[in-house]
Length: 397
Ligand SMILES: Cc1ncc(COP(=O)(O)O)c(C=O)c1O
Image (tube, rainbow, N blue to C red; front, side, top):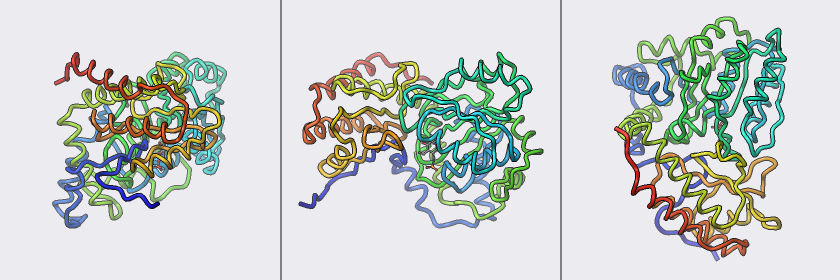
């Protein structure tokens, strides 16, 4: 039987996320001249508003690209062939970084990890302390590992780097954390932050970002990896007048301006609190069902998504297909070695309590339909968690 769906699709993968109607309307605009005054004003407003979201006063380069493109841009602008780079294994997306870095001709040390924990500051400290002559030119870490729902404490990594006094650049993938989980570019002295548009920024896929420190800009003057399209300099130069050195993604930039206005109206701290609250309620549900959350350390629970294991003998992809078929909801698949084993729930971006309640209800019904052994009461536990927190919540600002 072909299911006919009514109402709205539930897009509960951990990105791309739901794009609010207000942003869709902002994009629904005749294409403008990318060398005209209206476009220059758009760029200027974006450049003025964007740093707040990264909690930086530094410069941000915007590319028409996916997050992977922005990752390549971070490396080619700061490093030279053969440079040593330390990358922490946290999951599928750390593997992607390793592949990009190796293909670019960098000398990668891949610090092994379990996929249930974030990058460890003590491991970083001992690796850097052993690196007395400082050949590591960069440390790369994924802030929120989207394949596992584990958030590395980047502030603790920075403290470890400073304790050892190591001069390596700190490059952070904040693709699934920026605009959802507290991320502090300046306070944590992050040198390049890599982001894509399709998650916490509530936009469709298609924009990539590099937020760059003064130290990264200085490194870029000597970086010898080959680049043309990804070169930061012409973008930053032309941005000063409100333009780009190629035809930019004009309508995505209209969308970005609207998203930045929305984030500012809600207040960044309130955005973080909302994500924290939804994440706690989601975990309350998963734990009440008696299912195992991938993240092992409560200090590293992700606020933008939650991944849980299917019980042995039950295929996560079959479960996801049943949920899609019966309830018109997309859930995130397990990636790489977690394929078929985990389900990922996205609770980030443009999202609210009732959307979460609907999401968790779809999962609970799906567990029944698929015959997956679980305890009753997950949705009830989540509703209790949400209601209890609302009763005591103090919005900021
Ligand atoms: C943490 C992380 N890094 C990198 C990427 C790659 O981004 P993109 O798929 O936009 O190239 C993703 C995509 O989901 C991600 O979640």
